[in-house]
Amino acid sequence: MSKSNMTYLSSGKAKDIYETADGNLLFEFTDRVTAFDGKKRAEYQEKGEIIYRLAEYWFGILEAEKVHTHYIGCPTPTRMIVRHPDIIPVEVIRRNYVAGSLLRRYEAGEVKLPEGVKPEEGAPLPGGMIEFTTKFEEVDRPVDMEEILSNNWMNGLEIEHITDMTSRINTILIRELYDRGIILADFKVEYGREKNSEILLADEVGTPDGCRFRDKTEFEDGVISSLDKDVFRKGTGDLSTVYGELFKRLQNQEEM
Ligand code: UDP
Image (cartoon, rainbow, N blue to C red; front, side):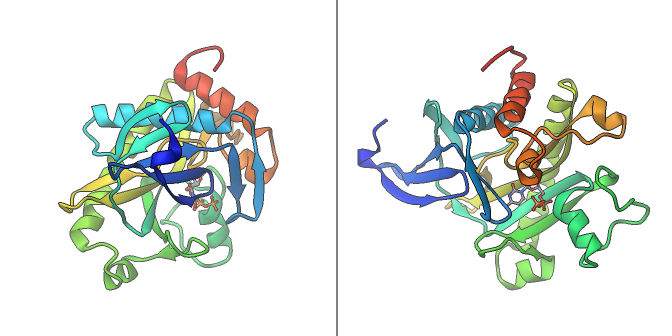
């Protein structure tokens, strides 16, 4: 599929986005990786292909489970065709265990943890937790229901709907990951609204760029061993090796 009949739209943290002649979008998964709102950057060979293959894998599983997504197909490795809904300007974070910004914000006195939850990395959040952040501001900022409603970013029914959809996605991901010895600590998803107002899952899902995965055996021994972008954020490991290991476990194969 040639880019000559497409319109370049934008470049995100890791993807370049084009509009196709028939009004869909083409995602080109690049080897870029960024953290801390773009302050830390690098490129890793084959990263784009791993992310693309994992996103394709998860969209296939979710569609089979009747989760409505924007996924259409993949013309070539690293390129994905998706629908072009209006993106809801709110990112949705679903958490199963304490990690990342939740702990940082707790330590800064900006957020409370549910009663009985220990303020430490890896502490379980019984029943889970959902949070919303801005999508189109320079730095992602947590937002509450009141702000979402008063800005008309979503109505009450839509908030309820995407909360349910995110819980279903969480359940499906946990189920698939469990047998591969992987714990899902948290993840981020985005949603779009089609012309008929139907909501669909957008962006990418189930990739180590947007989820925190932990090795289950180590986790049960109290050791946090990340199979995700935390190795890049914290400088604790080689991103290519870790993403390759995750890919192998999910595909049940020796090599990519
Ligand atoms: N996340 C993401 N994109 C963002 C912010 C967060 O994909 O712009 C993912 C992140 O990888 C993690 C989850 O959402 O799996 C929760 O992230 P958190 O709020 O803890 O923020 P972080 O520590 O990544 O700054």
